[in-house]
Length: 165
Image (cartoon, rainbow, N blue to C red; front, side, top):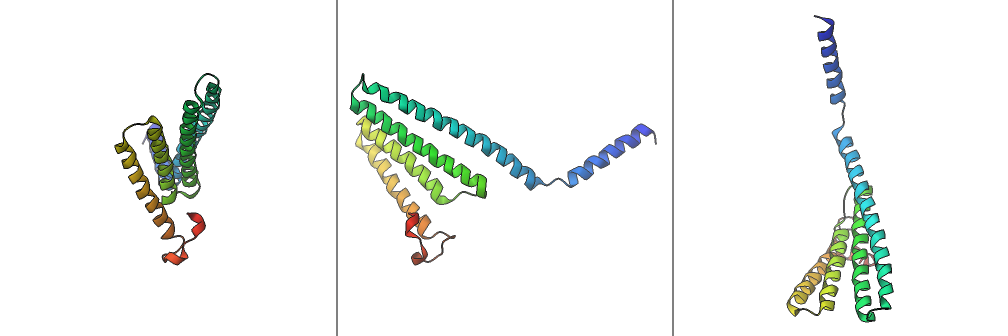
């Protein structure tokens, strides 16, 4: 066996030993932390930009009707709150490795409320408003059920903590 072949075999064996000791779960965790860090950075930049944009729109009170400007500020603020909920959900997943159903439902509720209010402000058809309102009612019921019968709190209804609602 030549020295070159022995070197190739050694490198292959060394590589195989390193791969056999590689922890895929650790790699997954490190990769997820990296991706979630980028997501959180993106959300923080979006929140900062949205807050600055909303603040900038207040200057429109000078030139435009206060009703129009304040409607836009309200819708922008609600969208920022939706981003805060998404950020909160991302941070929880980053810390705990799981997401609570209540966080997901809260995020959807805030987004749906934003959409309902913006549709209402547009003065459009009542059909989309009633559909959105129906979805909000269903999500509210799901939210209450998720808190009341949460596996972390207890399975009986009197074990639920009313402060979590």
